[in-house]
Image (tube, rainbow over all chains, first blue to last red; front, side, top):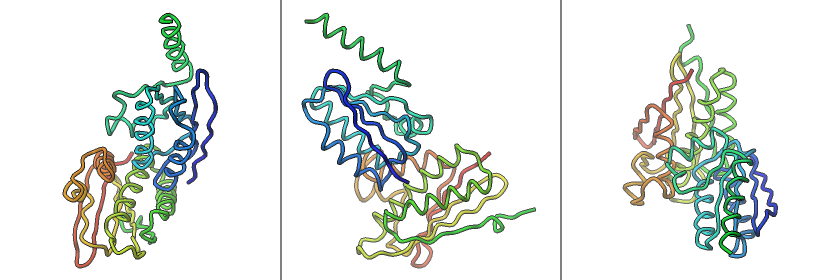
Length: 124
Length: 140
């Protein structure tokens, strides 16, 4: 069971972390290392893309929570997108979706980000 | 009619977290060969990972590698997974709360919450020098 991680740039100093495979006790340290390297106070938005993730354990959840805390501390936006049903179920069991920005797909997330961007522009 | 004993399979692995992948592969193969539904497979894969990681983390404080045996059986309605080890007396259902003072979101506690939520019954017994922990889940 392996994990593949791809980090891509997004608009407005954002980063998308796409995770593929299994996020479990053996692979969670790999994601933690990537987050430590890629996320700092210059990153405004962090998107965790679960589209191709088929397994998530509590060890993986802890890395996600830690990343959210880091981004929140930098006043950034932390977004989860494309959660597959078996992954969403894990978040729901531990009641972890409250307070998270979760979008079912790319379109729904784009709509949110555009609205947020417009708010910023209107405020300037 | 097949009995639960006819469907019994087991694997013995090292008590190292790195062996959780072997346990997961074993369980997935069992479920596939018994044509059990995908949702049960996903739920029990998570339950097995959480249980094995908790046993590996807390039942063997001596840092020496031991073994854990995982046995799976099923009957017409339920699937049963039993974890047996010779570590210190370790009840996964109560250990975190009693010894770490944590709740659902801490190390170990979150795993226990998932195990309880995704199975229909959990039972711990200390038999001689062995910890025997069994989870049971209905399947379709």
